[in-house]
Length: 106
Image (cartoon, rainbow, N blue to C red; front, side):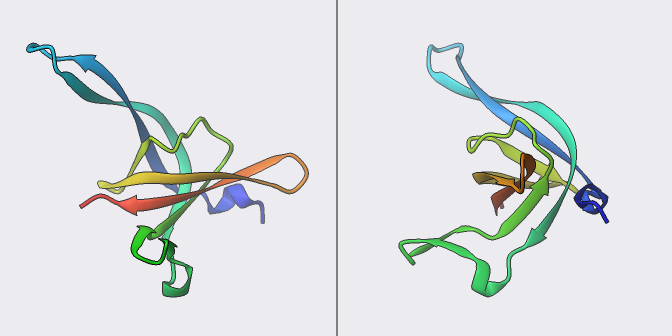
């Protein structure tokens, strides 16, 4: 079975841009960037990634094909929003797939 067969969820990524507001202040504007197929799964307790063992920085893993996804992006799947924390290109021979650590936004 090819890895793409596991990509069963529609995921929309969004990217932030900054513009000046009416009063001259910087405002973040989030806009949809990509609509892709992938899968998101919760990390098991012993997989949860911690930074200096103080705070959890990721609690989900997203798998997707090679796409334009940055560590400053957000992802939405099934009406749940996540922050992209890290993006890792997993290569067997060439670009194979992305493993993306996510933190759910509540």
